[in-house]
Length: 454
Image (tube, rainbow, N blue to C red; front, top):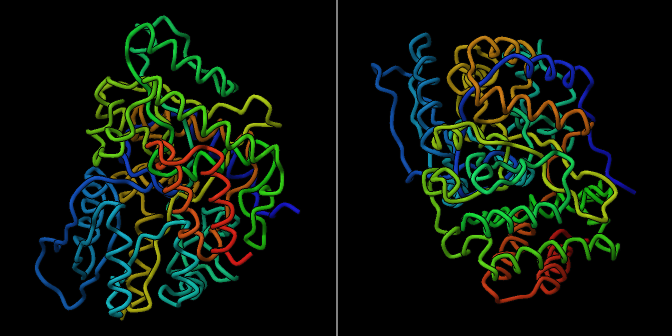
């Protein structure tokens, strides 16, 4: 029986559609594609204080992301400081080192007051009582849900408690360099394209121009695997945390075929060498923003930053459907969450800041869609007056996806991060020739099932 996930209300879809028709601008990060949470990558670990006269209230806040995210987040929080008697200690880093740092802080009972959480990790932090319920602050109105679709909060709800306020929603996408397509004389992809058409497109462009295509989701194979699984009308996780699809040979073969095709494209030179792609640490490193890659599989919230760095609006479309699949595997995810740690000494102040980061127009005019499309209809409507082309394209894309997707993912089950890491390791081992596609998938299913306690 398929897991039931909370449906996105028609209200959210309709508001999103109205929003999309109007405008837009900029985006997030680079390589460590990690969590539909918009797991950005880039800079070295950093910690700094807001440059304002010291007050008695200092709030530590941490997040991962690109330099663009760091800059916009600090700018938004500095505006908060101007109007409130509080100072911030900013602790930001890339995705690759974020969770190790956080785990060390958790062991020492020294977690920052406000923590950016991912869909994969929020369950464990909630169950370990390392982040607190936001319900008291929702009930008191400190966290204002007046313009927020209440169903969307299910994404940050663990065992009945809202422990993470979703920063927005996003989805998976294929972005492409229009100029390279034009040079190759190849038509732009459509949302209803197939896996075979995607491979043929990459080959044709390579033959005509010598330009390669990114390995799909090399740093986070889960996003590809989940899409394929959903294409065969399964949810990635059942309600009990198991893989309902793991006993369906059609799905298993679909995954294995996709992985094998990607490996073959690497061997043919059509896809970028994994040793090159895995080394990308910033948005600027990515070949597609250098005009050296034709296509890349990305989270939709990356679109703005990638287009901005490229200096031109990239094309964006849905992932190609497996040729024998039942439907498109597109899905919507909470991008990430803001949570309050159990070590926070002033959770009411932290809740007020959290509300500001999601519901304040001034903050959102700075952050835009970097952490996903806002859950607040008021914010979405207001942003249409200030955003530019890149954000508009992101909103438009999210709207198109929302027309065919009626549910958002709940948080992953406990220990999912460890299980998903097996898939990531196996996928990369496949690209390096250390496993074949069948071994990569079969080993993942066995190990993940054991890790998840099924």
